Amino acid sequence: MNKKTILNIKECKNIKKLTMVTAYDACSARLVERAGIDMILVGDSLGMTMQGNADTNSVSLEDIIYHTKIVCKNAPNTFIVADMPFMSYEISVPQALENAGKIFRETGARAVKIEGGETILPQVKALINAGIPVMGHLGLTPQRSAMLGGFKAQAKTALGAQKLLEEALLLEEAGCFSLVLEAVPAKIAHVISKKLSIPTIGIGAGNGCDGQVLVFHDMLGLSDFKPRFVKKYAELGDLAVKAMQEYAKEVETGAFPAEEHTFAIADEEWDKFTKLQ
Ligand code: KIV
Image (tube, rainbow, N blue to C red):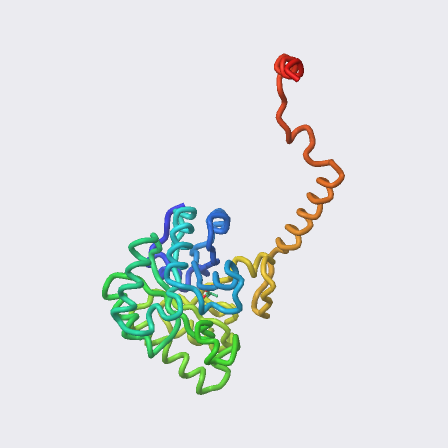
C-alpha cells in the first residue's frame, strides 16, 4: 500500500468516498492500516477513549505527541492526521506554529486538525504558510462543548447554517486540504460539500459528505459512548468480557492451561531432578 499525500486526498473529491478512523496505540493503528482505511486520525478523543475522561479538554500536547508517534510507527503506510489539543493553538499564531511544528517534527504525522472557524483563521494560514497541512473541523467542536452547552448538533437554524457555510469557505480559502463536519444536519453538510472543492469528512453529518470518520472504540463497541450518529460495526467489548469470563472459569476448574500451553522436560532430566530431591 502506498502512503497517501494531501494531493491524493484532495483528488478523491467526487471520485471516491474517503474513510478515516481514529487510532491511538499500536494495536488500533495496525488494525486500521490492515483494514485499508484511507486516513488515521490521532484524535483528542483519546481523552475519552484512552484516558476515560468525560470530554477532550484535558488532553495535552505531550499526550498527542506520545500517541501519534506510536501510531505513526505502527501504521507506516497510512496518511496520519494529529489533533491540535485544546489550548495548544488558541492563544496566538506563534503558539500554534510552535506546537504544530513540534507535532509535525517529532511524530511523523503529515497534517494537523484544528477545531474552529473565523477566530482561528490566522493560525490556520500561518501553519499552511509554514508547510504544515491543516484539516479544518467545524460544526460540533468538542473542545468548545462547554460553550455549546454539551455535545449538541450545530447549524440547525438558517442563520447557523449560513455561518457554517461561510466559515467552511474561509477555511478552504485559507488552504485547508479537507474539512471535518461534525454533528450538523445532513442537508446542510451536503450543500457545503457541493460548494467546497476540498473533501468534507463527516461524522454525524450524513452521506452527502465526501468521506466519513468514526472513533475506533465507538464503531467497534469498545466504549459506552452512544451518540446516534455512531454505527457499531462490531461488539468487541462484549466479546472481550465473554472471553475473560471463560478464561476465569477455566482457571478455576483447571481446564486452562492444558498440555498444549505448557513446557515439557526430557524424561532423562526429569529422572535426574527427582533423584536430587
Ligand atoms: O478527536 C476526534 O476523534 C475527532 C473526531 C471525532 C472527528 O475529532
